[in-house]
Length: 243
Ligand SMILES: Nc1ncnc2c1ncn2[C@@H]1O[C@H](COP(=O)(O)OP(=O)(O)O)[C@@H](O)[C@H]1O
Ligand SMILES: [Mg+2]
Image (cartoon, rainbow, N blue to C red; front, side, top):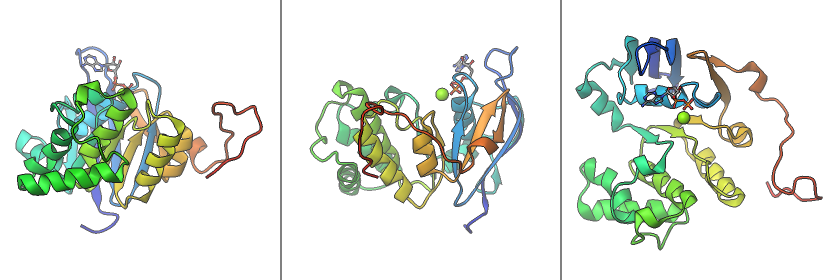
């Protein structure tokens, strides 16, 4: 598929969970190949819902979805697209369900038809790339929040997706790990949408930032390449910036 071709197109999408209040209200949005988009917005504004609509985990009450240039309406149509889109869930416990880390990371490649040996290889390599060598036999549910976040990211990357939808990827990570993940994500030549409240991260990892409000997504002009004052721990004390 060519650069700039439409990968995700949402047109006039409306959705509500309970029937009364519209979470998505005639929302339109497009992702083109090569786009790196940040998505910000208050808690409860519907960001996670948009990801679940794109993946076909929720169905809109009206509007049209096209994925990779084809209409997506039925489960069958979403299933094909899901293999090409990597979704990092906001809550790692929704992502990880196997007893051990290796099984969790190998699950995706196995599902895509790799042999057990290939899947183990891919899983080990992906873990190593995230500095998680040695985690293979760790018990998933005993990991810390930040470790679960990283293993979740490994399960997504192991599937070698064409598009990344990451829902708050830096949540729960310490500053050093966040820096490392930012480097990794910035180095990937993928189309992506990152939901985050972390503007430092979004400024580095994305090219444009969209804001979600009133059930719609719009380009946030105020956040387009604009110098900012950042804050971090011990920020008031003299310190050096390493990056
Ligand atoms: N499964 C659900 N059932 C009912 N309401 C939900 C459900 N998931 C989310 N909501 C509501 O939908 C709105 C949007 O949620 P969400 O997409 O998670 O927002 P965000 O990711 O921007 O914080 C919120 O008001 C939330 O309470
Ligand atoms: Mg959310």
